[in-house]
Structures are given as C-alpha cells and as structure tokens.
Length: 121
Length: 112
Image 1 (tube, chains in turn green, cyan):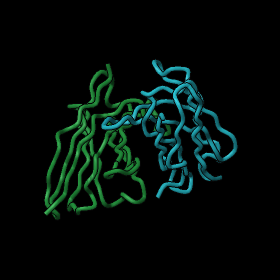
Image 2 (cartoon, rainbow over the protein chains, first blue to last red; image 1 turned 180 degrees about the horizontal axis):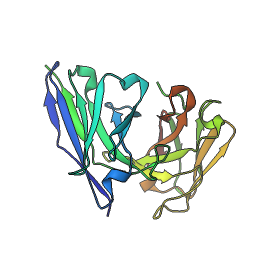
Image 3 (cartoon, each protein chain N blue to C red; image 1 turned 90 degrees about the vertical axis):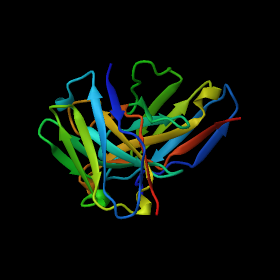
C-alpha cells in the first residue's frame, strides 16, 4: 500500500528554522511528484509547491517562492519542507501528498497525516 | 487568496441531495484544466473524492459525482448521510500562476 508518513509536531520560536519530512513507501518514490499543502488554523488548503524526487525539479506557488525550500532524497524515499526563519503566521498543519500520475498536472491521491507546526514566542 | 470560489456552507437533511459549486475563470477551469474534489473529515487529511472532473477513485460511493461546464464545476452528493459531514474542496490549475495547483475556498457540508 502507498503510504506517506510525516515527521511529528513541532513547536518553534519566531526566527527559528524548520525542516519537516515526508517518507514514502509502497511505490516507486522517485517517479511521482510530491506536493506540499498548508492549512492554517480553521482555514482552507493552499498548495505551496511540488518536487519530483527523481531529479529534484521543483515548482513553487508564487506566494511561497523564496519563503520555503523543497528538497528530496530519493535514496531514502524522503521529501522535505524547510523554512529558514519562521514567523507566527507560519503556524499551520502541513501536508505532503503524492500525485496520482507521473506528471505535475495530476490530482493528489495519497496524503500524509499532516505535521502541526506551532510558532510562538 | 484562492482563485476558485465555493459557497462557505451548505446544509441538508439526511437522504437529500446537495450540490457544491466551484467558480473559476478563463485561466483555470475555463482553460480546460481538469477539476478534482477532496473531502476533509474533521481532524483528518484531505481525501481524493473525484478526479478528472467526474471520475471516482476506487472505494468512493457512487453517491458522489462531479461535473464541469465552462468556467465552473460542481460536486453533487445524493442520499446524504451523516458521515458526509465534512469540508469539501475543488482543485484545478491556473495558467496565470505558472500552472500552479489552485484550491477552492472550501465548503462545509452540514447534515441536519
């Protein structure tokens, strides 16, 4: 079975950095795009960007370009989302999700359980 | 700021039918990009409900159906059940945003 397992909840202070992970299993990790989706408290879904683990090609949503870094290590089937300097407005649940097809224009058919990130002084 | 607009909420009695609209524009749904729908039960990750406008993944009941016309799409739920109470999101792509994935604003379905 396809599974995406994310790292655990994080509590950070403003200005700190963050790196959360998403480990894929049950499929050829390098062949499917991984998307990252933010959900702020009580709000809707926002696509942040996607990465193709095979060659680490990335596409960022314009609001998140320059704010976050996506990376992947296909040797251990893990994708990462990184913030260099957090602010309180980065408090959210972050989901990773796999593209159903081996292309960027594809629905997201498997989702991680989500990682809650709380940024507070 | 989402470019796909959904009604904030809809409610109906069990057994009835509800429809959720997803209004886009000529740079997304109207540009012939597919529309997908996700269901998010409270406290859980989203789940793919409809893909490619009107296709159901394995395991999704046929009470759920999708359609698309012009720059809009709709999700219909017939025979509404208590377990359908959730948030629903449409998703497409936008050519004015470097073909970014875009989500709708989300609709809360309440079963009365």
